[in-house]
Amino acid sequence: MLKFYGYKKCGTCRKAEKIFQQAGIVYEFIDITENPPSVEELLAVSECANIPLNKLFNTSGVQYRELKIKEKLPALSSREVLALLASNGRLIKRPLITDGERATVGFNEEQLVGIWC
Image (tube, rainbow, N blue to C red; front, side, top):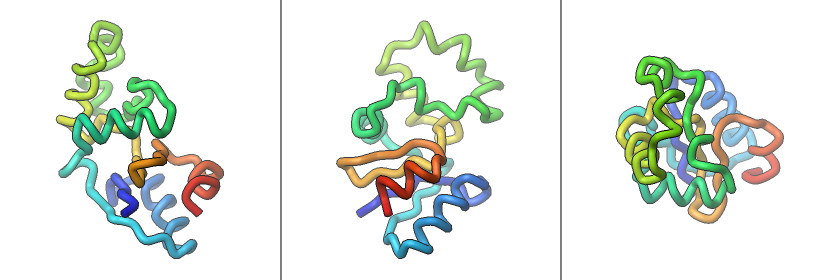
């Protein structure tokens, strides 16, 4: 089952959902702020999407700025980065979509259509 980690008030999540609905794609919506992905899921997403862990952060988010993640990130181990992301869904770039074999992070319409539609 396709997992769609998002936030209903997020504009890019709504755009992605609209694309999925128009294409008839069945997915499970998971509120990323209430149920963030686990450390294991985040590691798998990073590997499936072929992106470094630091690209999983929502760098434009309020929490990212308030917690001064940019300054802390260079000193954090991979394990610490994953634990931080898994503990606070507002820090994760969204939408985060995965089927366990493929994954996309963030909204890129061309990428979403190319991979999921």
